[in-house]
Length: 143
Figure 1 (cartoon, rainbow, N blue to C red):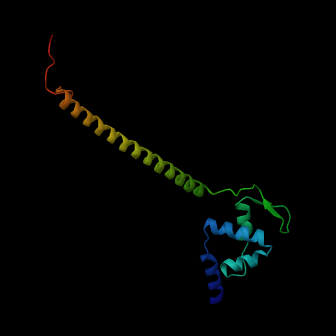
Figure 2 (cartoon, rainbow, N blue to C red; figure 1 turned 45 degrees about the vertical axis):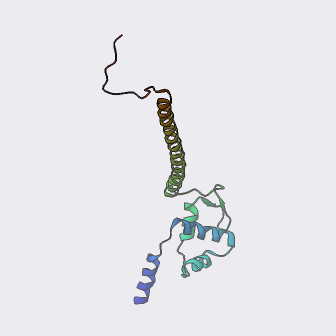
Figure 3 (cartoon, one colour; figure 1 turned 120 degrees about the vertical axis):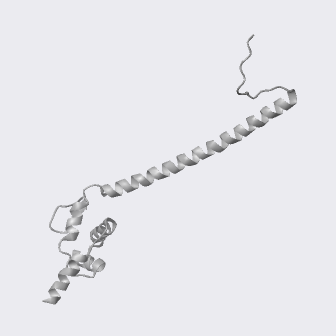
């Protein structure tokens, strides 16, 4: 009886991420091997208990016959919502990084331009003996 409990426990402990599920399905569809052989290749267990067929349906493959006549429901496998969000966020991160570098470039140019203006004003004040900078706390003269 303890052997049966171990097998049931082992079967429950198998967990697959989305990429591995897709890999198993694609390997099954492309290899021509039976599902049990593919399952054993990836898990070491001989019986797959309908998981591969479940994943085939989940990822948009259609099965027209009982035989291995499975084709794509669409040319591109539909991505789960989590993968779409992650891909979108990676794209947004790249856009934000590009935008950030553009803004940093503009900031450096503005700083250089500001230093150039300051230098030009100081030189003009010295050269022509005139006050160009605005002086604060002085009331305007009345003419």
